Image 1 (cartoon, rainbow, N blue to C red):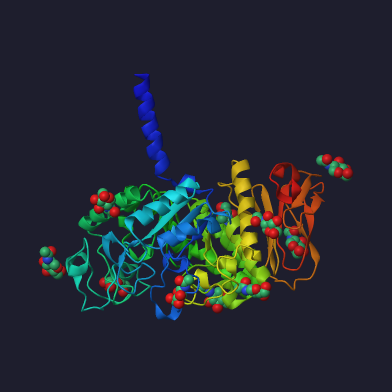
Image 2 (cartoon, rainbow, N blue to C red):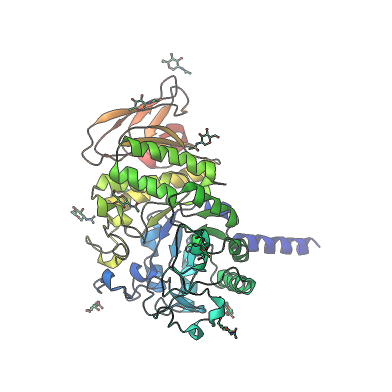
Length: 488
Ligand SMILES: *[C@@H]1O[C@H](CO)[C@@H](O)[C@H](O)[C@H]1NC(C)=O
Ligand SMILES: *[C@@H]1O[C@H](CO)[C@@H](O)[C@H](O)[C@H]1NC(C)=O
Ligand SMILES: *[C@@H]1O[C@H](CO)[C@@H](O)[C@H](O)[C@H]1NC(C)=O
Ligand SMILES: *[C@@H]1O[C@H](CO)[C@@H](O)[C@H](O)[C@H]1NC(C)=O
Ligand SMILES: *[C@@H]1O[C@H](CO)[C@@H](O)[C@H](O)[C@H]1NC(C)=O
Ligand SMILES: *[C@@H]1O[C@H](CO)[C@@H](O)[C@H](O)[C@H]1NC(C)=O
Ligand SMILES: *[C@@H]1O[C@H](CO)[C@@H](O)[C@H](O)[C@H]1NC(C)=O
Ligand SMILES: *[C@@H]1O[C@H](CO)[C@@H](O)[C@H](O)[C@H]1NC(C)=O
Ligand SMILES: *[C@@H]1O[C@H](CO)[C@@H](O)[C@H](O)[C@H]1NC(C)=O
Ligand SMILES: *[C@@H]1O[C@H](CO)[C@@H](O)[C@H](O)[C@H]1NC(C)=O
């Protein structure tokens, strides 16, 4: 009897610990990988990759597995990889799928993908897989699409007739086609919903997937999302590229407690960091509250500052301090951080496909783990992970703007207070006072970047030195004992 109970208890434990919930993702930090462009199985670091050609460059799941330490040593405990299903010959990015039940052979075999999943789990890292329910891909455009090539949707009846999207019209976004070669699946059809549910539950089980990133959810029938996420049984992260908070954040309610890729905050971050100016910082501060007010939980969104669909920050501004502060913003503000491959190498690609550079061709050497940004990323993940592990409230805390100016913003996230700057390396030396920082009066506070120690005043404020584009990241000295940060 006791044995029996223990057995079922163990089973229940196993099944819940395998299907990773939104709550389990809170403390995670994610590295975004474009499978075709990260690493090759043969380890070749001179193989050419002309991003303008939109062709496969040879990256594989085996390549990722072999280079996992490069990611792990930067402090990441999750990766997001490109869609894994069979694609058209030009679908190196994975978004032109043709068959849900066949893997993309360019990326490897079933065993390779399972090996990658195992290698991740051995390091206590999570696997997030990109999935597409909105459309299939084709070499031909409408009306020359051969629907018989698709599986399981092997007939035109599973797709909407072709029409061009009018983005001011939600119905049109849902039933029309992103491009004339991307047949739009009828996700409002119950047979389609059932087929997708069967597929995703098998996929998650077969490869021990911990989370899914869902492509272009604003173009999919909203009602099809809850059953899909339910069947997946893991954290769902929905992608919708839109800068309107009141349009975007409500999607959180159809993602079964998951979140969205935080585009609204990305757009205002980009405006602040790249355009600069007091009004844009003011807007960023305002948007942080809009995010909170319009979200069910702002800590379950994916926070990013670069990705495979937009020009990288150094494309607009090559300042290295700006790049470091952008990484700090990504890792330290609310949400689950997502750093895009190559951000730590200061890659500077422009709009898609320019920003999809092969990692092995990075200008200062392949997979260089000694660059300033690699080191900065590792340190920021170390700081965040310390806070996650030592402050129970950290991953639920909604960050508060303490103050801002034309080129600085000061934020409190629970036990961490940080000042980021958009001024770049030429920023003059000065001081910055964090008002209402909430430190106990007269307590010892450490800036984890300069390792300087300050004492808070009777009102709990700290006046910190700032300059040269360096960020300031403060925690109480008592709190970091044993962390080995700044010698504590
Ligand atoms: C790497 O690939 C390039 C181009 O395909 C080839 O010329 C070179 O010999 C390869 N290097 C190694 C070490 O295999
Ligand atoms: C295939 O799709 C066409 C066009 O929508 C439809 O007329 C036909 O009945 C469908 N065939 C089957 C077997 O579903
Ligand atoms: C919105 O798009 C749908 C589908 O194309 C169309 O039927 C409808 O008339 C459009 N509505 C407006 C207001 O344009
Ligand atoms: C999952 O694995 C089973 C058993 O090998 C296979 O029949 C099924 O097609 C797989 N499904 C997916 C979506 O990979
Ligand atoms: C980011 O800012 C730059 C520079 O002002 C601008 O050109 C670009 O369009 C912005 N990017 C996005 C995605 O809004
Ligand atoms: C957010 O909500 C708070 C509390 O209701 C309100 O004071 C604040 O003005 C709101 N801010 C924004 C930007 O919506
Ligand atoms: C490459 O190294 C040089 C010299 O250290 C540096 O100036 C440059 O910014 C680096 N490039 C990148 C992309 O990090
Ligand atoms: C950053 O680089 C320094 C100097 O090489 C090293 O001592 C430190 O451990 C690195 N920090 C991290 C988090 O990797
Ligand atoms: C915010 O910072 C500015 C510039 O550093 C300072 O002048 C101002 O007093 C601060 N505002 C508050 C409310 O503390
Ligand atoms: C903080 O220090 C000041 C000056 O030493 C002292 O007057 C004040 O009582 C202290 N406040 C607290 C709460 O310890």
